[in-house]
Structures are given as C-alpha cells and as structure tokens.
Image (cartoon, rainbow, N blue to C red; front, side):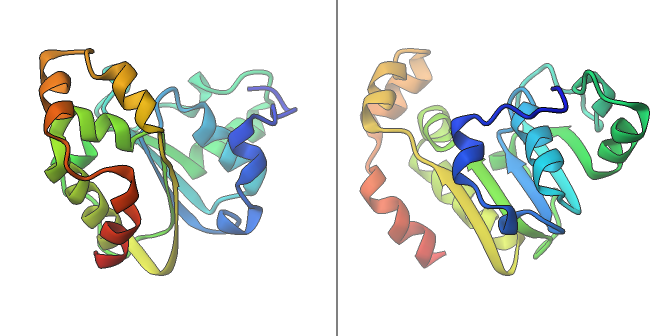
Length: 179
C-alpha cells in the first residue's frame, strides 16, 4: 500500500463521515488491504479486521507486514489504529456490546450463507446489531444470486446449503430491521 491509495470501487462509494474518528469493525477483511486503506484515507479512531482466513494469526498481526513504502511514523500510527484477528465471526461472541460506530461486511454474506446456511445469516445480522453503538452505520455489500449459483459447488456443504436456502436477498433488509 503506497502513500497514494488506489481509489478502488469500494473506496469511491464509502463516505469519510462513516469512519472519521470512529471505532470500526471490518467483518471478512480478507487480505486486510481494504481495512488499511480505510484507516489511512478516513482517519478511523480504531478499526478491527476480522476474518476466518488461515493466513491471519490468532493474535493481532503486525501492520508493518501490510504497509509498504511508508515511513516509520505512519506505520507506527497505523499499528495503533488497525488490528486484525482470525475468528469465525458467526461462531464466536468475543466482541463487546455497543462497541462499534461503523461495521463493514463486504462480500461476506454469500459465504456465510453458503457455508453455514440461513440460520448463520440470521446469527451474523443479530451479532452485528448487538455490536453497534446507538446510531451506528452498517455497510453491507451484497452478492447477486448469480454469484451464489457460481460458487455453490465449492464443497458438498455449500452445495447442500445452496439447495436449502430460504432467505433470499430480498429478505435481508427485513431481517436486518427486525433484529
């Protein structure tokens, strides 16, 4: 990640006021790059990236591994703001209630849905609501149904869960507002 943050499509649609001076959670942070971009560009008070990926260590990982072409001061500042945890967010309740001002869930719902089914999606949404500060912001990126179809054969579990999905994308807003 260089000083000139690449304006990817996601960074172009999120707003500074969603993050500036706020405590943020990035569920499904994957490679950590988007989490670091948000911290750098929007000056979060803190941001925690959580992902199930094996590449993330159990404890918070060093930011310096994810930052290049930065001076030591910038890396130090980021390491005080950004942290990462390897967790299955749906299967753990390790996070404090009403802790986060902004919660990101980008390209995650499909994988939760395919890997663990409808109940896990409800658990995901319930857990997100539990973690919000009052007036919190939830940023969710939905994947089109075609993406579900294209990825249903990743494993026997995803194929079975795909066949049993009842909660389609049209119901997500209702589920979220009911939680």
